[in-house]
Length: 295
Length: 281
Image (cartoon, rainbow over all chains, first blue to last red; front, side, top):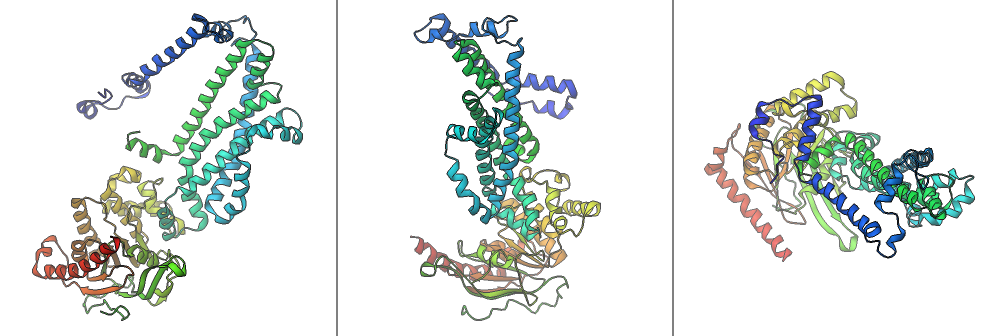
């Protein structure tokens, strides 16, 4: 069933392929598994269903939506009928603005949230001091903050970044704190027994031990950051993919609206993958642990 | 034997204890958890002397508070009454002169085997750099982990993890080693290999060893002195001096003398285990 198993004789006699050969070997191995085909078939099935609903049968209400053919015609056209394609500067302006905002917001949320969460997990008194407030503010929906953020901060940029930062910050902080809670007491005891100072324990036990939770949190938080960024851009914005969606809707051009949505999907996917890659780089031990469990 | 009387486990062995091992004394140690009106009394007036340079095994029915006793001797917890002292000096929290080898492995998973071993000296800033690395490598080679220095603990087998943990404790040159059921969870084969290996190490360095277990065979095989605990609230039931020659091997366990020790220990433990069994029902 599992065709990835390499024959024992091969592994023992041949040496590992180098450079480009290794890349080719990995690609070949990847495609001997079943999953990529399932993925490809899955994508086509979903696209086909979308096409049938909107363009093939034009089922009631779905006939108002742009189908895959209309979208891809415009998206990859040098002269897009509804104004947005991969050849128009405007498309990239929106992407760049949104990405820049996410970088700032996610960076701020991470650099504030991770240390705060770690300290909250590490010190009972810091937790008692901060945690109730965070728990009180956390359930407030991010859109409820919109008026306040517009009152508080000038211009378009401030409120939008503030909202994305806030949403992302809560997720990151909470996960970093839970990450410290998840560390087995034995490791603290072992470190104490070996003569670590409180700060040594923080650096060598608390931080690395909380990393798996932190990175799970960061993957969620970058998603949440995108979510609230787009919401904020739709309410108060001058540029950005969220603004593009609501602007297209107002002007009754539906194709750019969907293009912006799909673009958001791709960028979101890519940003989570980046966070995951950085995490795996930092947590070699954790990756090995998961591999050991066959995951 | 009355629980409050002072129990002396020391014997008249002629072999002198090395100067770097220490006498550990528990004097009237009691510990209870919970509020005063519904407290769970775990340890009751425990007094034991662990002679310097000898291997004393503590054995007791499961759930009798052996780990609490370990935590108190290590300095992770403080007793409600009584005191723990090393060479007459009361202990103050965990310290490097009393190394603990934990029940389940407590190797730090995000450090390689080598990093785990060098962790203690590095933290205390005593040794560092190449000389520390060399020392740790030598120690790891000695415990048979020469090829696994740069592996993470998860990549080692259970037996290897215990050996790495022994190395991590030994590099700190402790006066006292406290072993809390260190071989629990190992399969029978690795367990008996680890016991022999552990005795080898003990014969070489003769630290004061306090070894906690719930296995009678293991206890008799290892011990100079066998301390038998009761069911909760835990008292010392009896101390048996195990007079088997060293170095030991497994054949000794089938000797008449060893059988006699085992019979005595089992009778004491069986009665206690029955009590806790009845309570559980």
